[in-house]
Length: 87
Image 1 (cartoon, rainbow, N blue to C red):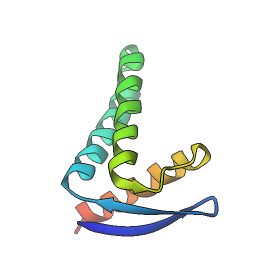
Image 2 (image 1 turned 90 degrees about the horizontal axis):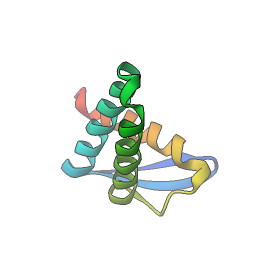
Image 3 (image 1 turned 45 degrees about the horizontal axis):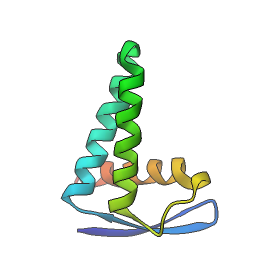
Image 4 (image 1 turned 120 degrees about the vertical axis):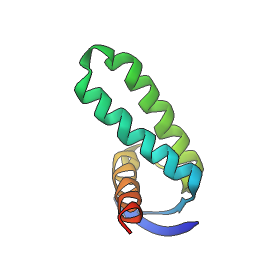
């Protein structure tokens, strides 16, 4: 398990990465890719993206992420996951 602090818009968050949160991050990357390549299924994919983001934030970040920070937190979380997978 990896724990790391991040700062987004002057707010601090604790990121906890374990097998489950890394699985959500991988799924989110795959869904992002799918949304770019298959525009016809955008509505279905965007719903799955929303659910996956919610699960990732719920299980991998504390305290609860503020609405304005959500995009930045997700971006940093995905970067952390990328660093881990490149080790």
